[in-house]
Each structure stands twice: as C-alpha cells, then as structure tokens.
Image: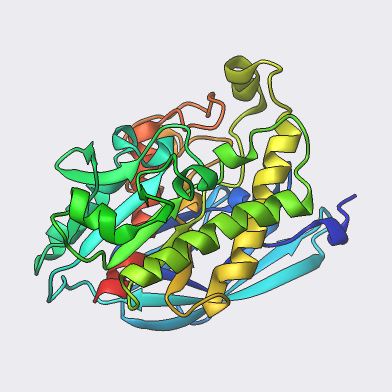
Length: 349
C-alpha cells in the first residue's frame, strides 16, 4: 500500500521547451522514491496542448510544442487502486526557435555526466548552431568535442565551492580571476552546475544539516558569481533521481555503498535545491533546470519496437546495467541536453 505522506512530486514551477523541438521527461525521476516502478502511476494532464504535441508513454512524457507560449501541465500521481493522491501544476514555457542576437559566454560545470563522453555540451552547442544567429561561446578549461566546459569526473558541490575547485583564487571563489585565467577576460553570462550525485555517496543517511551544508555551497557559488556579473544567470541542472538498476549498482559498487542511502540522500538534496532556488526563492537570476530527468533510471531509452516514440533512440537499447551512469551514454546525454537547451535559450534570448 502506497503511503501518500511518503510521496512527493519533485518538479520546479516552470519547465522549458523550444517550439517544434522534442523533449522527453522520464517519469521515474518525478516522484521521490526508492522504487523505479512508479512511472506507471504518473500521468500528465493538459488541455492546453493537442494530442500531437504531448504524449504520455509508460516510461516518459514526450512534448513537441507547436507554438510559443505558456501552457499548464498537471502531473498527477495515483496509488495502485487508481486513486489520485498528489498533483502538481507546472508551467511549460515554449521558447521561439530562433538563435541568439548577441554574443554570450556560457560555462557548464558538472561531474562525469557532463563530461565529454555523454555529449551534453556538444549537443547543446549543435542545437544553438542549428538555430543560426550569434553562437554562444561554450567555454571552460576542459575540452568537450568542439566546445569546452568545466566538468570533472567525481566532483561535488563542495569541490567547486572550495580551494580544490577551478574558481578558487587566494582565499575565495573568484570568477573574475577565472575569467582572466581561462576565458581571456570574457564576462560569464550564464553558468550552470549539474552536481549532487557524488555528494550523496556515503554509507549512511545524510542529516538535514548535511543536506543544508551542500546547498550552502551552491548559495556561496551564486553569491560569488553575482560579484562577477550581477545580471548573470545561474542554473542548477538537477541530476537524475537516483541510480539505475539494482544489479548494475551491485556490479559497479559491490557493498561499498548502501544504494538506498545514496538514493535517499540524492533525492533529499534535489528536493532541498528546488525549495531553496526555484522560482526566484534565492534570487531572480538563479533557476532550476530538470536536465537529469532525461535519464531513464531503469529501462534504458527504449526498445526497437518504440524507436519512433523517442527521436533520440535509433536502435535497441538494453536495460540500464550501470551504477549511476547510463548504459546508452550518447543517447541519454542527448536527451538530457534536450531538456537543458531550452532553458539556456530562454535565459540568453
């Protein structure tokens, strides 16, 4: 029996899409739970979009909006008897599919998922290129295909907010120093962080104070960034809601970590980041992006029989068998990028 008090739909107040471009939101990221089986109990209702524009499959919700505008989506969670036990209304903001009219510098920070092998930075760069206009400089000290970023394997919020990280100079994070050192003095217009997975890997449950201390690192980074560019955009890209298959976690990590504690820690952190930063809660220039919700925690992107349901999938994909990384790295990275790109585009237009 599902306990409604233990269930929470975790979404920011607003998500973004580009006119005529597909996004896919995987349902098993939407509900804070150890189980990946709840996707069959989640539905998305709207009267604002046509049947051709939004489709709710077993694993994911596919949205391909036809027109610019703001639309209401209602996500509903049902128990095993079909009774609705929770709902959340979200605004879908559809951005025009036109390129930028002025130059911008973007620095994407993250852990292994944001590194070159998952094609996130490359896909975002290609998406901007496809729209034409002025191309943003996807910058940083690390190479990501034809672009750069600041993504480093195994890193955390704590890493980026301390002397260990790339932004540190003297006794504090200093984005002016970083810009001079790595970006030829360019002002950073948008900086994003997709972190939290590695912060959550401990063999015990995080206390509320421990979660707060991680969120405080994010706030510190924002405060320091605001000194560099008071009008700059600070985007927290949420990771996926937890590990992939149980067997994959066991194969990769053995008994070095408790999977249930890792997932609980990560989901509590995601919940706290949404609470503290969403919808201008900390600052009007700080926002939450659901990028990691493009990662299917359990099933892979899809089987060949439903290839046409998700345009990023062009072949049969096995069930996820890794610990926290997707087995289908390229496809999943592109799905994640498809959720990040509209958010960036809106903030930079």
